[in-house]
Image (cartoon, rainbow over all chains, first blue to last red; front, top):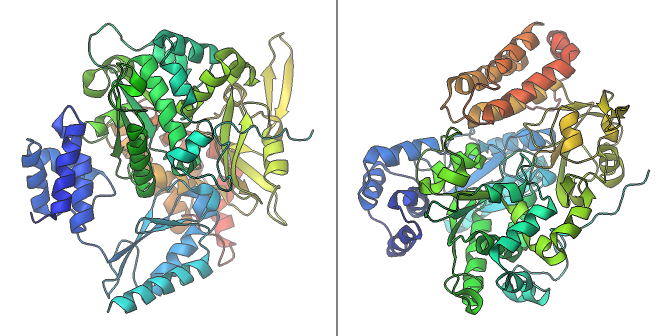
Length: 162
Length: 449
């Protein structure tokens, strides 16, 4: 495991928050995923060793929680809410717009590696439906026009990086 | 009858221009005065005030908060933990988001008063994984509070100390169930525990007595101390005291969050007057009153309820007060206060399909009836919409739902069956007619599943 010094520092900081080390499984996985972008197989072993657990204890957590991923994703992560309140206000259309804009399908990485689109369950902002999270930022009332606008921003930022 | 005015206690400062989420702003508005008062009181006196207030939990079940605290095993000699349920995952509910983002110190003050009252030395805020910004805001707020001696060791010059830590979830709805949440906090899969024996008040986190309270509930504790339990109990209606946040989403002109005295506003007033009524050219068809697992109400249906004096009264959907008890008497629940409105553009088979997909995704898989049943309900509604429906599918769906409810470890079994049971029963014609309705459907209509 090749983690950034800052990640290692935060890992050592969080473990003593719990009287039982095992409780730190979720925070450690979050920190590793933020650093590496996903949970690689060696991370499971590494966390297990760090917290004095069996690898299976960590692996069963990685595979249960929807937010942990075992494969890399695109540079940007678009999460469109699928659940009822958003669907009633056009969440499916928002998702399809993003798919068209990036020539990809939900659950997949776009051909240029730029985005991963996910159709996720309730993001708890039902009053401003449909909502979309792009990386950590929430975007509200995302109709197809706004989805196109957000897509254009992502493409522009990608262009600047190149 | 005109709708009453909002009574903003918890949401007093939400969306207030110039109000920021830092400690200085909170203190300018009287923040932490109640914690200062609390540490001069006997802990039992705090619990007594909450008992007197009649406060019921705002997470969904509506269990009396003072009773919950009263059940805590204080003689075991083990530490007592507080776990703040900020997993806000019930579809249609979005109140905690605003408290956490805009007024985090109100929550922290409520937590600290609760901890002092219950002799808790360690509290965890279990915040859903999809609130990364909220988690950062809370981390900062806790650091500020710690710096000002409102939490941490020896608060406010006393010999009492308490730490609060943030624990982020990772996208699983079942972590909102209190024993699932505890398992998750212990670093495991969030499989709910069986009760008895695992009542959190006795055998909770690390097998120690544990209080699990919702964010909104804990915020109320501060205000109960401020106005006194008796005065709090005068707000709202008997046995449904205080204010609560109603989150309205779906097909209304003005969706959003509104704070009212419990039971003082009716569904009709809320939807027509406060939320501006249906969208142009549409009519209300159905409403889910307390988060997506609550049983649906159909506009046009009536409920005959018994009064205390033995007489009866008949209520329409519009007449139902937004409370706990009348909602329950009408066969549904006030739940988490998440009101989801559907108008006449919605086909109920498709709406149920959407809900079923949610519950199938979120079943933890521990109990067979729920793991298999939620998946079959999803598959059936999905097939009805995408692959050919049969007029008897409604009956089939209900038979699956009936075999889940009451046969599982946790209340998820009910949560996933109630939508199917209520949709199929109340809209049976629509389920029977769906094969034909689907054929006649115009292209480009709203997709829900």
